[in-house]
Picture 1: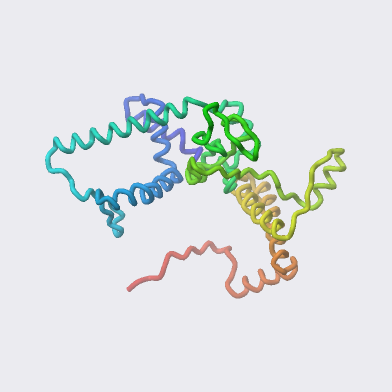
Picture 2: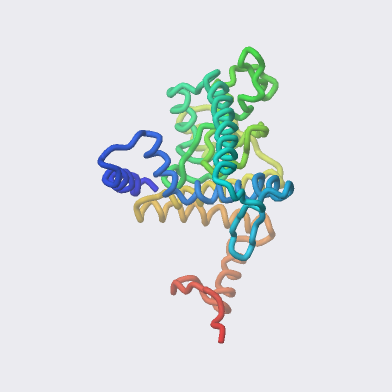
Length: 292
């Protein structure tokens, strides 16, 4: 979304006499981010829909994807009073959240270190910051901190904003995690190519290298597949894209071997399927059958 930031802000300023607040511009940018839109559409269909329909406050028409109040007050005064009650609840929630956030904040240096360690990618899905905004997430949520602002992670007590308790997640993964989940998604056991240990030794370095079991190997390959896919999407030049495709192919060959097919057998299956159903070179996109 990076390329759209500047024109969106300039347009917003032009439409409002050349002046908008930081909060107003941030809201405008969010409105142009499809991942933000999809996230909140899921939120609407989850808790608000379930709770409000359960209590008979709203109805939902699936065919038009439309919500409506079951009973809309007829008097304008009653509507104003109801809006006032809603405003009061919103202010109470915002004040509560503000106090919670003021208790502890992540320093800019810690944020930088976390994002640097993650190479600007989501540590859950692997998506690049070039594609989706990346947040710094508390592994053990702030809501779990004790009165001294401490949390326990991997049997170790630390400050809630200690960088050991921080990870990089994209907007969608972070919101899906919510503040009750303490899953550590950081990839510390990274699968590397077979000659990397030898190359490290030749450089005079000492590294901790473990050999995993067959099941763990397969899981690591699946993670590597996600990682290489994200790097392919983020690559900018033809040279870089081809290099990432080579890495992606190597992971695919290793996965095929895990499932009983060596490289030659796997490539023959690729050629057989291409002969039967074709490749993906023509750019055909199926959009459904023609109805009469």
